[in-house]
Length: 217
Image (cartoon, rainbow, N blue to C red):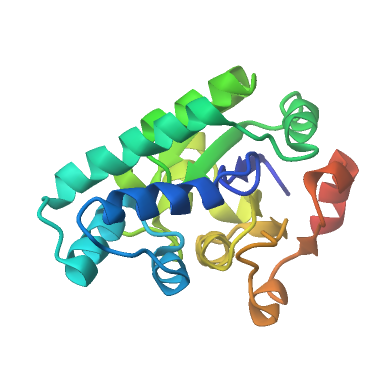
């Protein structure tokens, strides 16, 4: 049975992975680095510590990992001030599920960013649990953040379903035992092999209805 639902944030509820890429590009550019597509793919799903460690290893920045994290978060919040794009069907899906299941967020974004976004788009009160990859040792595709979300919800992973858009996120949720509904990110799509592992694929959350969860039982 399904007793809880866990949402990823970036690429599922809001269109933000591209803006995280812009934040990394802007910060790395401050010390002469050029953030490329291969770098974005290398850190997709990682937590902030892993991302900053990658930047220092790759670009030899003059900053500590901690300072880089602060710079990236600050730049990301500046970009949210410029635009915050809610993906089609996202708010409607949360509104439909909230009366039926306890809801959680399991995201690679920092906690402060997650809380800012869900409050800004008007769904903050619906999420009993927020779990960030910054709170665990390993980011996605390791199962840690989904395990943390389910632990805080008080349900085993096998009794929860995740909404995910990326390959690392999908593998993270599956490794934690969750069933997965994939809403593939068109800019950074999961591989066909990864999509073959999920329980359902939707073009967008606008195609979702709570009745679809019954087919996952």
